[in-house]
Image 1 (cartoon, rainbow, N blue to C red):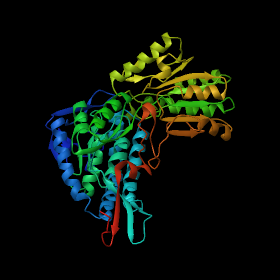
Image 2 (cartoon, rainbow, N blue to C red):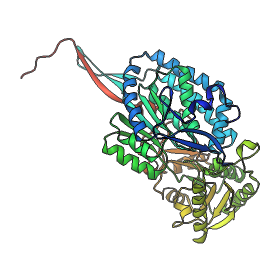
Image 3 (spheres, helix red, strand yellow):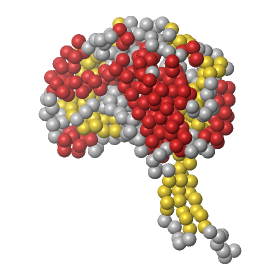
Image 4 (tube, one colour):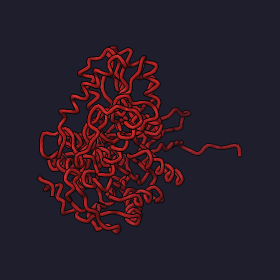
Length: 491
């Protein structure tokens, strides 16, 4: 049991179980959840299969029909109460996130804070005026469009920021009048699912509206093909996203895909080098680089590349890594051995192709050293592939046109950033970058729960989630006309 685990987060509730409004044994069996830093068992939860998904989707459809009959104020109160419940168990939730994901405590605290805000904002959605529009019409006719819930929404979330990346879809989808079947990554089922289930259960969410079913690929495919599920919201790798898009599209479901990235950070020749190095290090190494928005390509003007590299090497030498629950560390473990080996293979193959290993490049148990590669060029894996590991990959350029060309030389299009003393110059560069999110004088790892978050190309299918995008993603428009008497037609 995680230290501080009590009250809202009593792990005995989900021991070998899944959630449907109550806690029940999964037909698919169970799974042991291990701590990446130690390899020790944290808990055991239910593991859903296709039959669990089918039952959940059918029951969710029945519950959703009753949910939309509740008043907006009644529904909003549930989200306010859930936010309060999560806030009261802030410490326990933070500990679960740190131990399941291998992230430092500050990262866990950030996830809980954002989750509380997302719940409160979902309550506010129900009380704002964005439920519909009155349209122009002829005299004597009322014409309006209203937002209608889709029905049952399947949410598939990843391991890296599991609480945020689950609740940012679950809460607004429910607020918009839908039911939700959530399949969190089985490596982080508590952080990515059961924390949310417990908060909403305590808040009085009607049974059957939210189902939390950790599962593998078979459960995910069942969500994509089940006739009761009308939309899939997926956050994860581009490879899996393509498969989900294919399956859901074949069954005419709406899809919101937020996928991988190889985000460029452009640094011009006139910058404060210490600030630029700080931004580059954070963008490349925060949460061990296991972030879709990580600064995957640090594109530096050739006049300052050597100086910036020296500063990054110095930071790598002194950046503490280790078990995040032990205290003063900046980086924790890679999520599992397979991912660590993948990161190491990209680094070693890039060095073999001519990149220079300036720092790091080795693993110590489950930890991968903060790594700096210089001389990265097209054709190297470090140039084109997403690391999902702590590697600063440095590419040089001569002028702004070349920097823009390099930044756009990727199939991805999630985030981008430009650091430059001239805001006008930086903005002009940013306007030409092919990315869903652009940050001027900052690095690429930026998100707030009130902004529309989404990418293009291999980073997403053009949709966004969060803030003003939530009504559009989780509803569809229904046009309604009202006349006092039926008109006479010439037929």
